Image 1 (cartoon, rainbow, N blue to C red):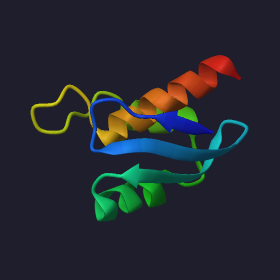
Image 2: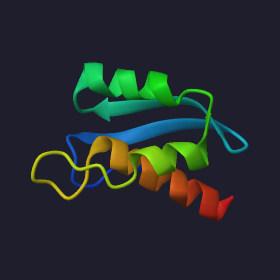
Image 3: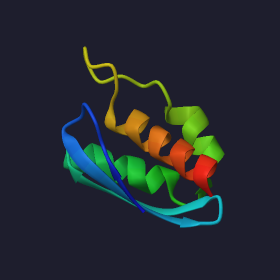
Amino acid sequence: MVYRTHGTCSSAIQIEMDGDIVRSVSFTGGCNGNLKGIASLVKDMPAEEVVKRLKGIRCGFKSTSCPDQLALALEEYLQNK
């Protein structure tokens, strides 16, 4: 699935799921090293756990962040599956 982000430096998140398990994540744009780190940490993790850990994280004065956008994308996925 591809999720178009809002309010972040990254413009999209590509997420590969296997049921409720996150198999891979890649971001378009954003802070390359940090986002590769996040993608590595959430690999093979249940989507609900990723949401629990990342939802609500803010980047500076922004109301969201790339990790928060990933959590929102996974929430949307879980609601629509």
